[in-house]
Length: 465
Image 1 (cartoon, rainbow, N blue to C red):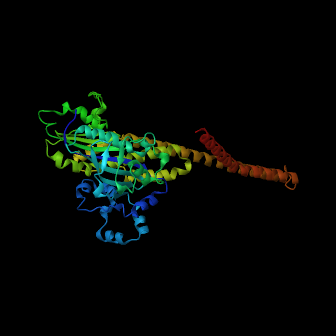
Image 2 (cartoon, rainbow, N blue to C red):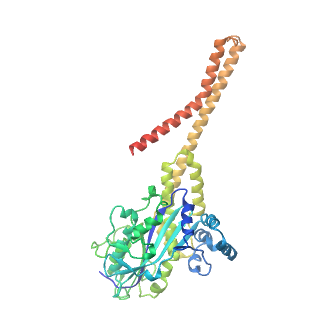
Image 3 (cartoon, one colour):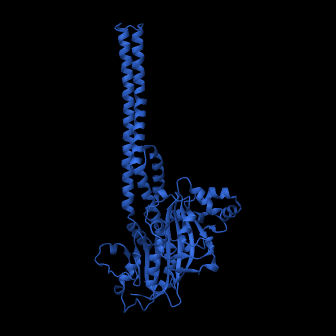
């Protein structure tokens, strides 16, 4: 089934983690590259349709520059680069826009076919811990009109430009022919070139090996109206949601339990879909709102609902990984960071909008956020209790040694007082000194033994892996 569309766009998101300790240096790369990138300072009036949607504490987290007054904005423009970096690198969320060469943005071919596509926007969004998202907005351009299969095939192919996927499989005809990328033709190489040396490659598989797809499709009203119900084309919606190609022939089982959990429908001619690999809106021009207003809302207000949930998921997965691999020495650092995340980044209510909260809960459900948070909290509590218990064991051992030393000295004193032991006897003095030295050395010897055993275990584990 190939349905005619009247409007569409697709966002592709590449999530990555900046290597530990290099976040400031990474931000500096974009701040200093004024030729290709610009730092976004939010405007209270220009961006009102986005930021006004959120509760104040969420708005402050997502759009911190919104709270810069005019004096600070003017001062920032005159600041030296180092001072700018000090300010920007400490913001909870930063946004950089790539300066696309407008005269060349139509020179893109999809899979060596007659379908051209435009990259309308490239932006980098980073959260303070170094969790970042490279975002690309695309749109197809076809002389005889764009059909649903064109969009399905494009989304299915384009998402494979993820560099992690390209390491496993060569690009299948997806090339960018734009000198605005400084001669880099393959978009996968463009991403690699952009992030080389900064991306934490050890955690590169923290999510998945395709680009996340966030897409909007508005059908011609002849395709979905009072006479032609959604039930007749519902399989096209699910192919759209699960990023499958147009020729995908299998019919999705309507009784599959996750189907209703992964969708949201409030209005007659629009349907939302949520999964761990994509988010979509499938709509009909039968309602003019779906052509004129909803696509704007979906890429502004609703996009940041999705992005916040995406950030939370990756942050929680990272906490879980660190808890499994951390020693007791890192417990305080983990405690500080997890407490900060809980207080400033973990929200149950993000907006007063009923539909906004419905969408937020759907993303929480799709990313399994409540269960993941409970799991991390439980892991942390168990790890903390274990660390405290081990510390108490060491304290108890030290108390036993102190008690033993005290007891030995008391016993020696009694032996000397009752003249059972001659204090002037050389052999008795040597014996007494040896006992004291061994008693004092017991605890340091115990600690050194523990350290040696731990190092040997780590070395043997590395050799095994």
